[in-house]
Amino acid sequence: GKVRGDGPLDMSPFEREEMRVIGDAAADGGVETDGGTATADRLAVEPWLPHQYKWGNVAMIGLVVGILGGYIAMTTGSAFLAFGISAASLLFLNLGVEKIPVTHHMALPGSTAALAVTNGGEGSLVVALVVAAVFGVVCALFGEVFQRIFYAHGDTHWDPPAAAIVFGTFLIAVLHIAGVFPSSSWVATLGL
Image 1 (tube, rainbow, N blue to C red):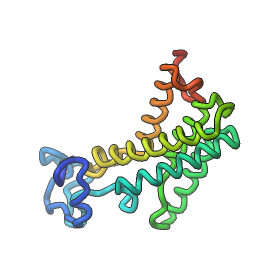
Image 2 (cartoon, helix red, strand yellow):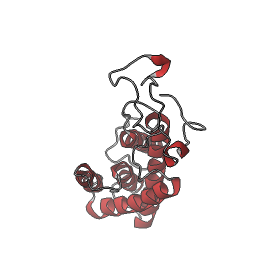
Image 3 (cartoon, rainbow, N blue to C red):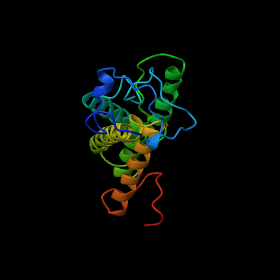
Image 4 (tube, rainbow, N blue to C red):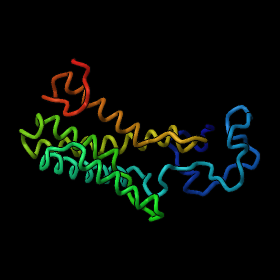
């Protein structure tokens, strides 16, 4: 879509509650799409989660969720339990409870990285939690960058959590292939 503001990372038009101009086509070049033309009730920039887009808040949520995901993974041996809990919490958001943090894209890479760096939970809990925290923050911020570039200025849905999970698990695979992590947990490395 058309970038509104000072660049694709700029969310200030949303903060100022700027609206799109009536008649602006929904797609570049003035061509109508399935959605037709824009109306006055659409914000110029629409963040994926209006309550969860500020850098510091996103990073802090990623830090906490990464640590929790790593701890759950190290305690249970499951890379997926923290992800499942986070994904299940989306039910509340879908039922209309506002301001529920969306965290599954932080929990899965964090818990997976904790198991990968400790070779399935055999290593140091402290190392696992530090790595999980780093992955939680990195994937939280990657999801935010992705939503600002591909979602907030667009006219269709690009899923920021899916992108963050792909990025995080790809990073785990690369770190395993490079010999930094002794295992890749459940992440496929294609025999490399």
